[in-house]
Length: 118
Image 1 (cartoon, one colour):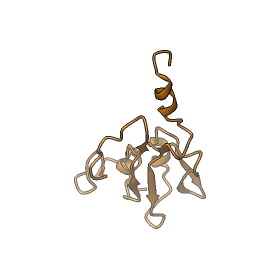
Image 2: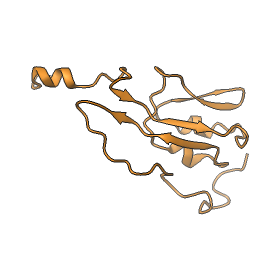
Image 3: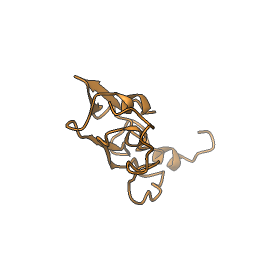
């Protein structure tokens, strides 16, 4: 930070300030969920918790979802849906993420033996 100006130091976002950083969000279809917990294991931000064999997004303050959609891609039942991307304000510019979609193969393109069904 030694080379930042005073203004730049003020504008650099604080990662735990919800006014400056908005984490991504996912929704879970608990009717289709089998409780395999693959989404919990795949989440690099540890933003998904598991309770009563069902996944839940951690509450605000604990949710650090970066909207990578790894949980969406790994779910064998398509029970996870990415609903919003990670957003920055002030100093950092959010890159246009276009439409939110799966990072890997779509469900109908996934080989039948790729993941167990439950």
